Image (cartoon, rainbow, N blue to C red; front, side):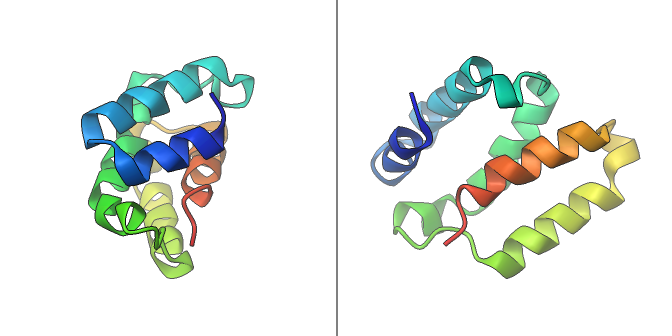
Length: 98
């Protein structure tokens, strides 16, 4: 599975099916191998908030991505995120940028 398949599924599948495909991508892609279940849940929660825009093909705006990234950085200790986790999460979220 590649990112194009994932984005196509975001527009046509239910959130649960999309979440399953995202988890598969994260597990199979070596670049995201350090993301554990909690980190994947963080990504899914952010995407879930903006799934309507993704389904409509609009994606997530740059401003919203920056705000989400800032919130993650501010709460990194509480969420137990490493710098590498933050980098990978931001990279995944950028894939949904409009």
